[in-house]
Length: 136
Ligand code: THU
Image 1 (cartoon, protein in one colour):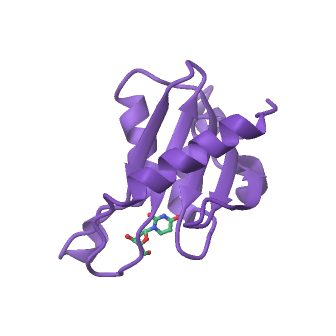
Image 2 (cartoon, protein in one colour):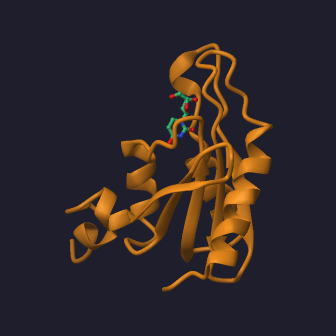
């Protein structure tokens, strides 16, 4: 699906706005995400760290889990804002891939400039997915 630039910028603005709520006292690396679903709603997310380090979670997965818990299943695009504009980690790529390989991932910096874009299948080729568990 093609996304117009107004929608892209709106997603980036939502991720940027959400980023202020990141709880990242250990890494100091704040991330904001905004996920657009097929119903037209946007779910935001931030990374939430913990004193027990592995118990923290990334912004992207928070946004996905918020959306899923509201009954959403189809994702059009996710914008991610961080200081250096990195692509999502492997775990987030895997979680995103569960719900669609064509979801567009939009990476922006804290100035709201889009730095790079890729689909989930670009980021996670040969993904292990629900299809692997069919016909057991
Ligand atoms: N993090 C995200 O929230 N998203 C990413 O795409 C990369 C990493 C978080 C996890 C951790 O709280 C901090 O950034 C440093 O890794």
